[in-house]
Image (tube, rainbow, N blue to C red; front, side, top):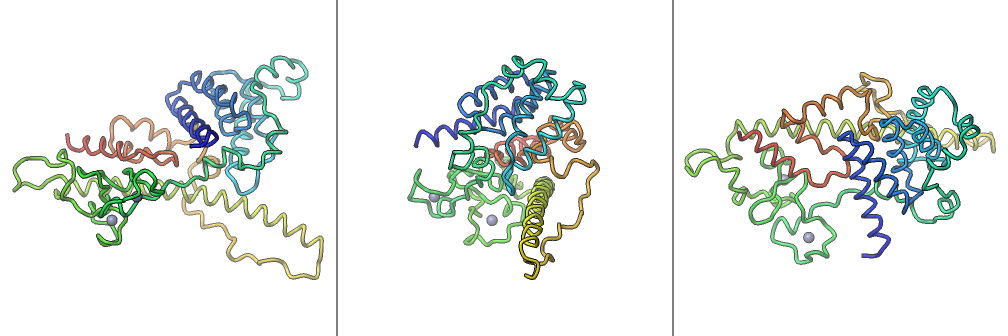
Length: 354
Ligand SMILES: [Zn+2]
Ligand SMILES: [Zn+2]
């Protein structure tokens, strides 16, 4: 593993840790961890934004404002997650300015040293713009989850650790005693593939014994008990619906950014030459229907980065419910960095079991 990829792994790890701290309301820990990450990667705007968020929650409004202003000082690349960061920084900055009752410009004039302290580790604009590589924030947001290895789940994969596909269980599968990942959708009767085509195993034979209720083989085992399977099916459907919604929201935000970009270009082109026909007239650019036109106005663009939004009632509900219902444990992993949700699933299933 090269040192830079190792570095980006560590940054991902710490970024995740900050996330967890924020979710647990441990804002001081989140802030300290963010500062550590920024020491090695001062251009990481995601982490800087999270630090600002944590500072705001602690009540360090000046520090928060400094972080938001720093994030806002870098023009976002269109069509990337940076646009969403930018919007989120704007939103939170306005809250802070409202609370403080004075502008950033005033503060830099009256408390220049304080501002400089809060800005450490300072973002170097030069290193950011001269860097040809993709910024790390973008790398980790764009990185898709690895696809599960079909060979591994069927006859066995000979590539072992070198395999480019994942051998680990994921949210769509359950690990059996042979180490194969069994298709969750097959277990709930919803897989559209046959046992040969599905990338997961369709064999129920080696499912872990905790799913067998009784030694008595005449009784149904976990996955043949239709009542239990029905409950799991509902949970999975809820989870998938929630993910779909989040996916659609981020797609919509992306689409809007693209549209903005296109219309800018269009205007520019039109100014350049008026006799050319306008580039791609736009039937395909209409944003999707507002099917989930939400209960709160700022939800559609910020939801993806609203780590624990005070305005999003849906999310609050999720946090409150998390201890009592297994459905929320199951659906908890709707973030792109959740690799190990199968564990949550096992917990959820245990819950149902009792
Ligand atoms: Zn493999
Ligand atoms: Zn399947």
